[in-house]
Image (cartoon, rainbow, N blue to C red; front, side, top):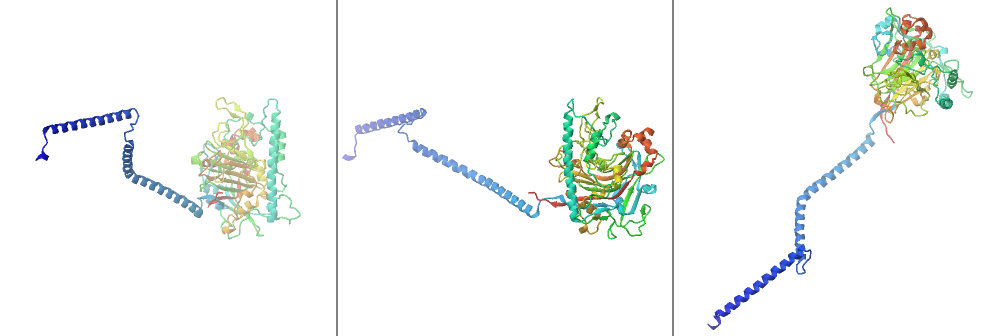
Length: 606
């Protein structure tokens, strides 16, 4: 047919046109691509290249990657977030529970309550709280005595129970409550005035010291102020005698009392005259310690008029053919880490060669667990002292000003360890470390009484009818404090009432001692948190009552303290072995030992 035929020339023309167009298009495309690549490399964007489309594609890819990442990580993040939230919630619940528990239950219990009696050692009961040690003295003390057991002590007659009728001469003045308050306020004012006098005296002595030509203060030491323990290297020349001027000044500081040992200040006319009563009479028969069963160590005075009585424990000594005296050492059963320790004495051992002590110790762990000497006398010493003995890092150089009426023992003339030359530097014995190189061996930190200086120990104390010693060991409240009251008419009413009622069967009738009502102590030792003496220097100690002779303290001071005896007997042991009549005064006469501990309570702090 005419329409379906095409000749060969037409076909060749069409194929040639198609090849040229394709080649041109391909060339153009390659050119554009090349320019785009070059432009990209030069940082230029060709206008004809669609970068927006490319960016959208890239964003899409990034979004896809993010979605993939989130799909993988979101469960983990959610778990971590949930755990953190749960922990915070639990912590909040615990804090809330602790707060509500503290409000409902309160803080931990501590020994901060009022004092409760734990041991009332009166009459025969005193021996039930102790063991009798039998044997020689320790090597460190080296006393010239042989301690004996209870049966030997009974046989030798050196332990006795004596019940005495209290005559009017031995009674004290008792006032109405209102006047007692006034009297005790006056006594506290005396303490404050005494502190003022001490301050003025110290300022005066300081001014006098500055006037010395060499610019150094001269050292004068009272006879009772120097060394106390193990002074093996001391010689006569080490002791510096006090001047008469200073003796007069010290005596002016003392508080005057009436000639009658149990009569104190004259009552004012606005109050009725005082009554006379025994200081601490035996309680009626409803008390567990009211009566003393008569036996081979009990002596009862005749009492036809049914007068009040007081029961005493007598501890003494006896000579032996071997030389060392038979004596007593009582070691307490109970161990203490705190407490209030009171002893009511009517007589204590005194005289040349004597070395009595009422103290707290842990002998098996000495000095790690410390030692506290409550009452300790040597030869003719007449002023009360309290000594603490410990390991390192226990110093008493942070005592609050105005907290005590006493002073410190001194450490002067300590021989140099290498040269032996005495160091005459004036120092107070305020380091409790038993091996402190600047103090006498085992001297410790020693508080000395000033207010009753010359009347609070030994022979003068016995002349006043004895006295009451008290030591408060209170680590929670941060101190150890000591008091001495003599004569008995000067004992605070609260303290007297506490001792009088300590053996009452009915607890409601017992009076709790309150040391804040007793006036200032003569000794104040800061211990515990915030002080220079951690409380754990003193722990796990028991009471000891003993009577030693000579030894490392009394014996080493013999030539100084007993010059009259020294002329005839060159050693303390020789003097004691001669059984002189003076040793008849070497006995304890104890009305009672009272031990209190604070009740455990929850204390709120503001």
